[in-house]
Length: 187
Ligand code: AMP
Image 1 (spheres, rainbow, N blue to C red):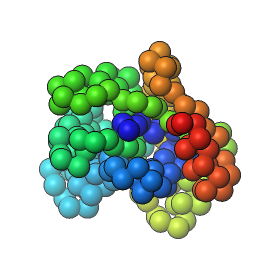
Image 2 (cartoon, rainbow, N blue to C red):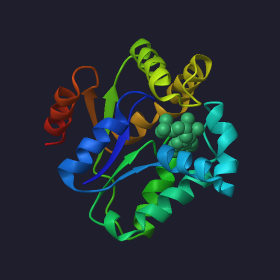
Image 3 (cartoon, rainbow, N blue to C red):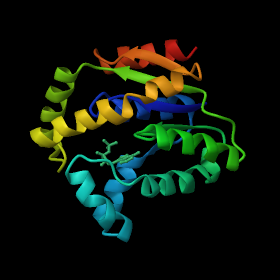
């Protein structure tokens, strides 16, 4: 199973992605996690990414594409993977399709859309800001990240719809209910 998780920040991609990892026994690849690790480690890549991340902007395509290509080439990703937070725009989606050909991997099977409305998203992110204190979880940055999602990432639904790969799941409810909806939708 080669899967892309699509949804606004705070829609539950990370949490549901972890459940999918346990269920399918394939790795989750999160560009956000990889970038935060690079920032924490103070690598050059982390330094390049930090200001865009703190402002709620997208990091340059070549940075995230490099991260994903390196990760998809590793042995544990050959039988399948769950992409969380990548692709984030149509340019990245096109590169991903080409990358899979180059790596000798089959194409993406499904793009799972976790649908949650904007007001619910803002509330969830504000709650997360209090609990985790992520630098990009301040209200003005949150609003900007949602705008970036709507402007740049949401159009990916059309990209994957054209390939008949979109599976839409209601992302509001208990974690287990949402997970069962995803499994049902993937059947
Ligand atoms: P996330 O944890 O997925 O919400 O990502 C946190 C931040 O990392 C985003 O707001 C972006 O600044 C950056 N980021 C993560 N994935 C990507 C991507 N595919 N393209 C560009 N920037 C990304």
